[in-house]
Image 1 (spheres, rainbow, N blue to C red):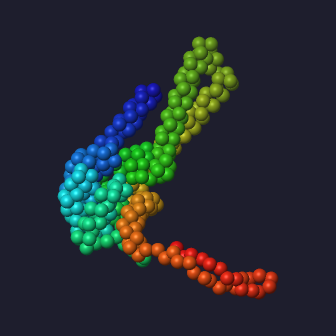
Image 2: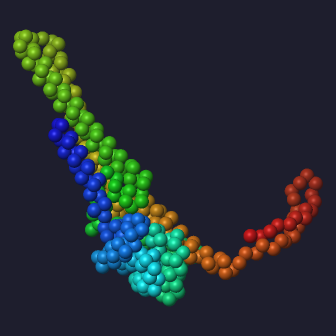
Image 3: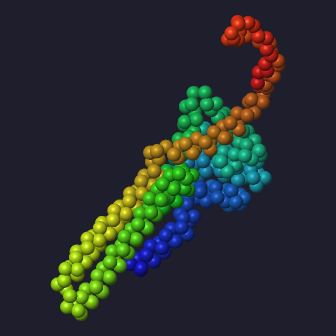
Length: 305
């Protein structure tokens, strides 16, 4: 049992250590961009664009490559990559890692103007829904190995913290309970062997106390083993559900996370339109009838923002 526990710990350590290596090129590119290594981010994003199968995935990779290129001081080349991304998917937006950079946003806005595309204003809600679905496709590819990482790491790498805690907790808790119950059953059997050997040495194998001990021990071992297998089922169920959630997102958690991320870019692009329209800050007089004990007129001033 101790050997099995050590093997399990080695297995867990291996998964934790190798999880960054199992991430796809696009995820590695995002990590490099966040770390400030824009040259590496651009190369990895270009590699991800070549490997991507759907136009939306290619567009997302080119958008990140364009942002990395702009950050390296090559705004013209970055703009070209943005245009390429927009031609593949008119609804593509800046990656969240670069959404707050003014130079990147300026280059992306110029690319949008050149490509004749713009971010939906959210009036009908259809544009933002399409944007959200497009953004979530890349994380749910069946060929992406990160979706199969156990212990909630697959959900955590998609930004779904609560889901990661739930599925990861079920898997870790189930494994710990399995080990605990199997250890208890093993200790009980070990103690029973010692008691049997002592009873045989003292010719006390026919006593009522000894027979009751054997019955109680057998019942305990059976119960511990059944609890261990139940815990193993919980672990397997937690892992299976986490994979289903990572691939198909039935709860919509990935879609919600993408909506929050993409809405920041949409509002950033809409901000310039609001500045062009200006704000009406003129004072206006308003005549109102107030519901009071004695009906009367109230003259007030208000400013419209």
